[in-house]
Length: 487
Image (cartoon, rainbow, N blue to C red):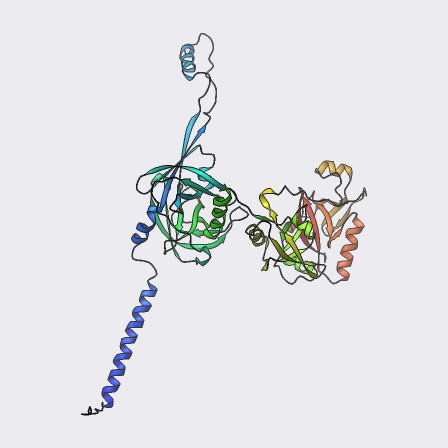
């Protein structure tokens, strides 16, 4: 028997559609509400998950006692016997005393590798690691890196230890929730929550890449982990900005993508092995773009000096602008230094430079930065004892003489123009040029006399340039200054 067809009246069909639309609208609103509730109801589950892997670190160091007056008193003084008795008890001199310090850390493997800050354990004679359960184990230093303030420790345990994994710090976004766990002020296993306040902060180190957070970080938190909401370590709590020593909501954690590279090297070699290019470099300013032929923007790093090393062997020269390194575009000095440092020692890389308005590709085999000797700035060969001086572009310049070499502590073969005075109302003063600076090049050409400088200024004007690029040495350190020539 065939089912009988039933027709639905149009008013009822419209009502059904309206009900479905209302249902979907309510569901959509509920989803939006859940998404908007970014703040979790509680961090308790996350804290329970990660706390067993966080440790308190106590260090002990033997230091010499303070020395001072031994209590000398005149003969016959009523205090003479008292001081003699005191000195007899003290013995031959002040005795060493043991000093303790507190910090934090976290376990990264079940076999007992522990990460902390270098400043937590630096100089320690004994290191004791306390776990969430209260168990204490002695630790040994596997390796440490003062440049990133990271240290790797090892403890021996009869049972596998709970551990946490590193996350990708590059995925951390400003506004994301984070959890800091550690041992603030010796309180032990304290948890604080906050957000990522900023990324890519630099404090003072060459390889700095800090996550800034407002999660409470205090003394004793150093070396502790900064977790994302998945329980992954995205930073190592290292420093705070504070006028009083306590947390004011500005803390800094070394990004995990920096830490993991360091930890891997410390575990494998007991030390870091960073790539070394072997150049002295400087950022490019806006006014340098006008002064350097072929340069279109401030991206890149200009080479100020090339000591003996990989770069010199590969043909890189002073005044070259490094545009790309190993296929990566160079934005500035900081980025280039970090990229080179993260590159494997001994790797042959391609470096694209801008030279005389044209690009060149050079192949450089990287050395090891830790093995590199201190670069000594190269000085130009020349012999000029011109006694005169002249005012040019707000500068009073005079050729180098033997007397000036001695007075300024210059190398015996240093040549160029010494800045004898700077007009404080000039562009030169604004650019940071000061009395005693040594001008060694102008427009990437050696300067031995005042006439050399005047010729380069004239050539720059004839070429329609608004500024001239000067290579200036101060205290042996070279830097470029683009100086306007329309004065």
